[in-house]
Length: 96
Image (cartoon, rainbow, N blue to C red; front, side, top):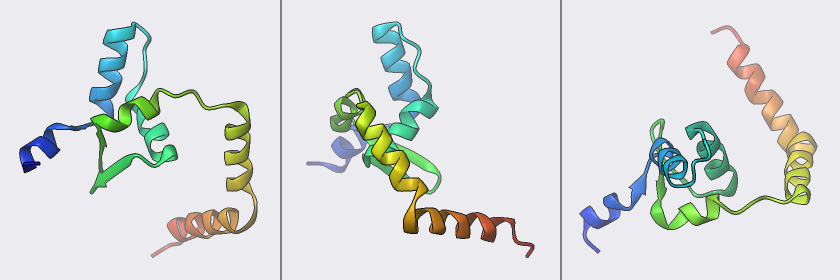
């Protein structure tokens, strides 16, 4: 595979949201695409920019079940994850 082919298969969340909106008529924001890509682990970041492979777009369109959402929320709010989130937030607010 050539380098150009690899780069051609990467899209930004804005491009994906625009394509979904144009093809289906349902408005999807780039932020929604960004959050789900990050949540399911298909996001590739370069600096602050996020890129998503064309091959991963179908995974973004799969509906999450209530149980999956509930498990994700409980995993974030309890235990070591919650403590780590709190510590990061405190560091951000601490004066330099």
